[in-house]
Length: 143
Image (cartoon, rainbow, N blue to C red; front, side, top):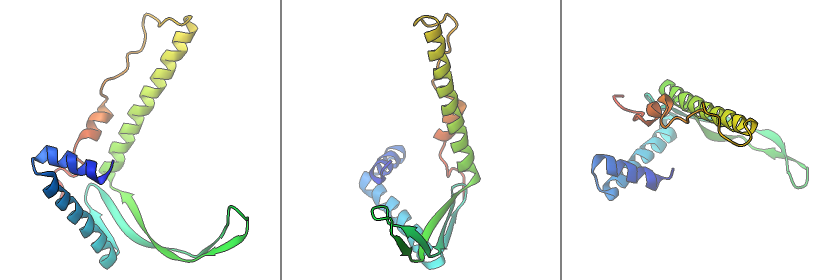
């Protein structure tokens, strides 16, 4: 998803113009970056924590030549998702995995039945509990 798609989605949901919504989204991103630059950490409840960390210098290899090269130390932004985000992603992944397993099982049964679907075939789910949970706004009712 791109920033433009985020802006359109929010704009449609709350009834603001896309121009005003884009300004709000950009100011939010700017505030996150500014806080990281000044404080090195920002915690967004029910979402996660962004933190500036120093990555140590290391030795690496140039993939073309195979020569060893020194990679200097640098600062990077790390993100640790909040519990709610982790849970929703886990549930969505489990629902996706269950649908894939069901489809594979259905295909295997179809092949075993000579290309015809068995009478008691598996019906794919239209909307799982994980998808419903994933559709909820992440920051609803947060600080």
